[in-house]
Length: 257
Length: 297
Image (cartoon, rainbow over all chains, first blue to last red; front, side, top):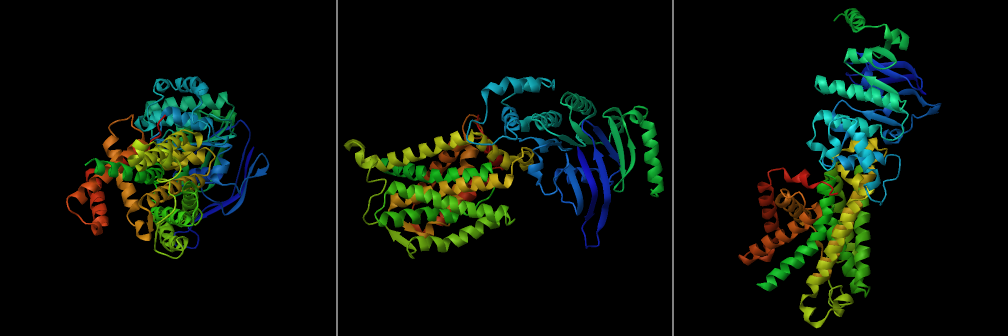
């Protein structure tokens, strides 16, 4: 499905701040895998997501999706088959547009944004049905500007919008980190529900170890640009948060922290 | 008194088209587009030279729109493809257009339309019944601004229009929709500068001359109209951004006429423009800007 081959990435090359993060990094993701990615700050979790999405260029290596090399595709071109939810709830929606307008735009992804009406009235009931799944009452606020919603509500909408049209990958970049504990749980459950229902392949970076252990069917831990731990579904089931915390500490001690 | 009022409305309607263009770039796209100072006289130059050469005045409007759009495309390309900052991209186009405009006007920095048909004295205007003849300039400019407004309202409610709002609101969303936000920006600049040049072409036909010095101050006028309109109507949710921009233009022209009536001279024009803009900005506590940049469904 997704294959990262010999990825190399150096930041600020040729300066005193030069830092090499990845040297020949490899990762293979199979269809239907829901991978939770954990690791300390600076371990390269978000960078690898950015490389997959095309937000930052890579120095060398290959990104293959279903055998096709996508190195040359720009970020917006990759969006055709990748959906992404960011840590910042503000990134996934347009604040000065209404809920309905945001939903209508998301619904049109992959189709031309031409001179036909922005809102297809026949689809409104579908949007309401989708919004009602969030159990936030947004289905009755279709004409409210998204900017007036709370961070949790916006993040829920961002999740809904990014998964509305068919996609190959869902990229979740610490998407519950900016939310309060309760909202964070709701969003996480919703994510799991959507991933299962649409049988998505997903990569989720999380600092919430419990989420990382509880959800998904594969888990990897990154450290200094490498994968130090890779558990499959079976192994993951037997793992508890404390085990992971232990490994975390060990690695940190090795680093001399 | 009535004459002054009619004059204000005529000017307001004509500059209202300019305000609609500035509304697109400033309010929707959040792009401070200074190319307006070049595209406004560009429209006037195109109209003047075409009419002097005996061409159809309505065709002159179409060509002016196209010329302005082309200039908008240039600003867009400089910014998006050349990765030059938005403000500077506009300044580059504006500066280049100063020379281009003089070239368009046959090498002259001003060009008067002594004879020749304009939209205000031929065709539809000439067909108006006798009683309405004194008001024909008002009627023609009103019809033009209404058409522009209706077309824009329609466009802003299409899928393409939504994308324009999204590009100004949150580029990341445009990217997530698998669309190139650079292209959307360019499209907005094309449309906006087309409208600005159209406004210049109408003004040129109204005052029957082109002068290269029409340029400086037009962006300020457009911004003042948009900001003032947004500010005044931001409390009324049902007023569309386009309506607010046009109302702002009329109001601006009214203030302007007031200043002239108080004894300011013609050479003080730009000074009045600048002071009025300053007043508008100072009364605008900063919440009027993004508020207006909303689609209206």
